[in-house]
Figure 1: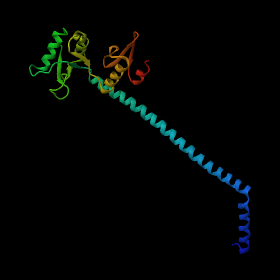
Figure 2: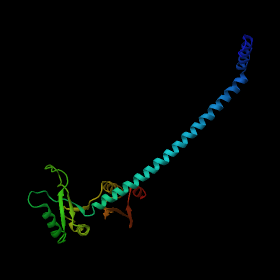
Figure 3: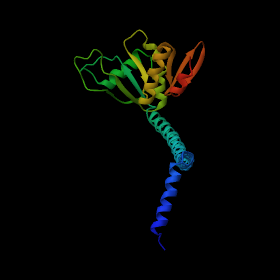
Figure 4: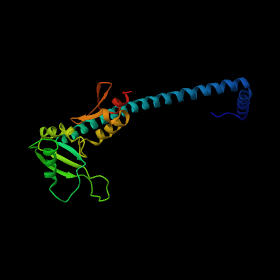
Length: 214
């Protein structure tokens, strides 16, 4: 049943009266604001819950990625356990590179019978280069490799140097450690990075370990 014209007029008058009342409008505005605020808070709480869940998931994923990266790095370093880098050997077309290295090991390092599996220069040849290209030397086993590495001090005074072959991650960490502490107090052994400060030895596994050293 619809309203009569009179009823419509009276209803319109009542509504106009309400909306012309300042107190009513203020109360009405407060109620509307409360309703909107409550609904907004519900949405905000839901969003905060979703954000917290996503942050936890991202943190878990980051942790798993770090663990995976560490495993891959360990495996890669293990694959280099029989290798060394040799610096400062002049480049020459005369002589077999393997025989040249064997001669250095025997004559300069007094290590006879080292079993070198294979070796080669790293990088393309550049006749304008200031220094000879380094050599990657791979030995029959880790024992043979360690025999050479442990006698590298006998090369002191020559232009030849021997270092361990490291993964890129460990090499970058080694450079950062040398930059912070000084290369004279930093060394590697077994593919691991160590430093000595005031007679105390530290192993640097990651950048966090390095940052903790003052």
